[in-house]
Length: 199
Image (tube, rainbow, N blue to C red; front, side, top):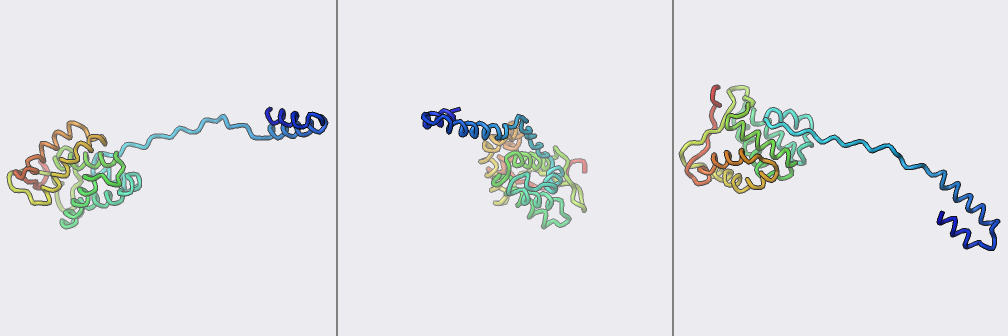
């Protein structure tokens, strides 16, 4: 209506010429499409990532981008953990630890899920995919001096536990993990990989 009023005011001495303009304005307004009343579709939340090694491998094989830019690196490392080649398994363990400890370029949900999967698997609380030539492996803490690389990873984990909790790592798992690796940080114990109990 304001455009019609403006036209009428400007051409008050020529009402006959204002009328067509008003009509044109009115017809132009009616020709505009009405805003859609159809509600936009509700975005379904992304499914929660699996919290087992096997589940993460399957999920990231199907859609590696779901975990963020580091998703393919995490997937390759997890797949390497079940390789027939011991050397590949060792390199993959280092690769996976580097990715999940820092969480850099990982979706926080996948960072938390992969940490939980590795911790529960290595402590025998979740099923571990076995390499083709042997039983699944679990982590064992024993007395002894840890190798520098093991002690270094343990220190990084302890330092980052508050950030892990902020990302969703459960408090009870945090306490158990801290109890497990604190002697390693102190140089009083080391970590060994052994067949899981009952294997």
